[in-house]
Length: 180
Image 1: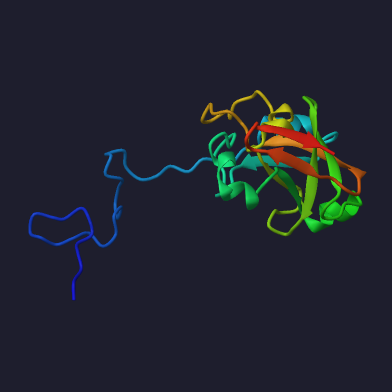
Image 2 (image 1 turned 90 degrees about the vertical axis):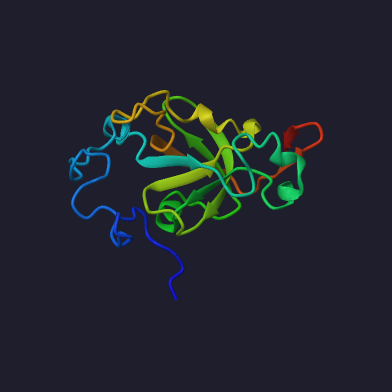
């Protein structure tokens, strides 16, 4: 049973099994590959800041979470957490639940640590949903040299253990937080 045709459909009614067989439909020909080049952010700072911070979102919140923090999503994710690879954590004597100082040449923040193999060695990850954590104090003002987009995915950082416990209480109604 046929459930549809793959676009583009030719005049004779046959569909296209592989979309870009010979060239891209924009008329620019085959794809051109370029050599990968390390970000200048990493090259300039790798001695003092050997880890690469990448920031992103989680499903439960959007950007600064000004709307999603008013929902029950706060019961699922209630703070930004720093994810770090087990080898990087061991080298820095970090365990899940510890508080770490995440710092770069631009600033520093304190975050609770999650040791996980979800991130690759040499990479640390956090979200930016809770403005009271001020994660963007650590990221750069630079732009990706190819796309000219803000380079939030590549920031040279280092991580240092501060203490063994950390708790952030977020009061959604007042949109305030207290670190205890």
